[in-house]
Image 1 (cartoon, rainbow, N blue to C red):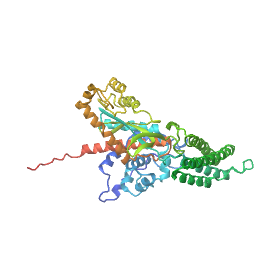
Image 2: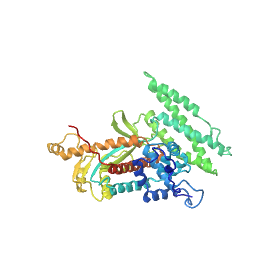
Image 3: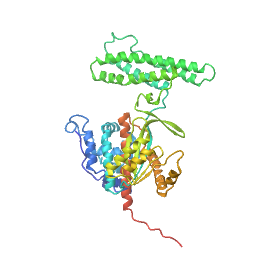
Image 4: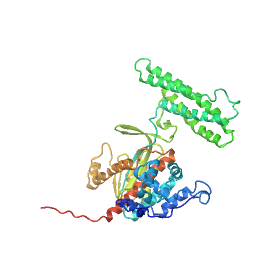
Length: 474
């Protein structure tokens, strides 16, 4: 049965000691989270766990506790294990998370509940938090700056040999587990359950040695090692395909889980085999859009930003729109590696939908600067468009970009670079620790929402601070 909240208790009043109170920022954040819209949106998703979650079963961890623990987790960039340990040992965090004197949920329990929250719900929560920022006059939406960044997926550096090794490891592990599930093995071949991992390790060691070699014959030795590795992986895929058919006819929940695993990973490993043959054995240039760089995170995209020290990144492009006051008004996890110029119109349309009008100032970098985008922004009602053009420009354009308002807008645009850096350091948006495409959406969504909540809370704290007068000495 899904509980809403525990019976309120003031835990901090039970212990009278210095420092046993919420700091001003957490106090304001505590008030912001007492919002029925946030509560009901999360509750609706958690109620989807089972058909009768709302009425039957043991009392669950309350919705209020789950929401607040997830906010604290992403606010400080903690893991599930850390958040459970730290809340359990802190009276201040117990009071904030509304756990009081009850048992703190285990990390696995919190993880299961968190995975039920849908990306669409997080976008709704984000839009509501932006409305709260407007209502509290933290931002009026008069200025908008836009930019993109990359959030990496949690994968190792993709090399064809390691991808093939990953495929063999996963398929072999599933094959060995299927041996205990399939009682009638007479119809299967003698090699159906053969373990080829030792042979694969031996070939991969030889491949690494061949890659280090220099001189005549090194390239042929490397290609020969790859050919043997591809052959072994192909044999493992054939074994898995035979067992996939047998598991489909076997009743039972465990057989169904193994069948689903094989059905998921066999096509991915087959794709790695195909791209290795094309790239290594046939010398073909495989386009980045056709490459699979992880069998565990297949949605990962190869992104070339040409940054110093990291020219190529593996993850997803995230588009951000920020208004004055430090509020992220829009975030979007983009498919593939699209042109930044295509995101100006969606950013403007969402801004108009949120604030009821176009921003007075719109700024972006040179990747967004096209003549069409500049004209479109003016048609939407933007009074001052700051999109510096790259390359050689006309004298008239140079004079236009030397105007004071243009240069001030360009300087203000640089602040979003610092905002992105802060999001990655404080809220751990440099690398997604959740799995799958929905996991990426949840990781980014919670990071942006907690950033906005923290920004609103800090702004409210600053407005309540007494003014200090500085006395000058003569």
